[in-house]
Length: 74
Image (cartoon, rainbow, N blue to C red; front, side, top):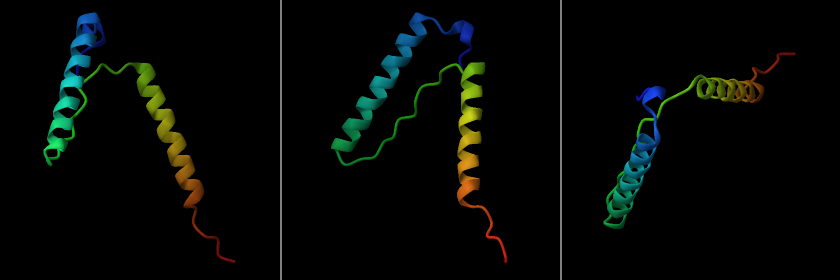
């Protein structure tokens, strides 16, 4: 995974080109009856990204717990 210090305009553009080429390869494979799911190129992860992901997971877990709470015995 690239570091945030190495993430400049060139790296951003190269990553976008790589993602587009992989998507094109996926479409060509699908058109020919094959299956290919491209993996997204690695991008740096910031502390804000990690905090957003942790918040999203907490919310998903909270909703899951809400709907899967054990039944009360009466």
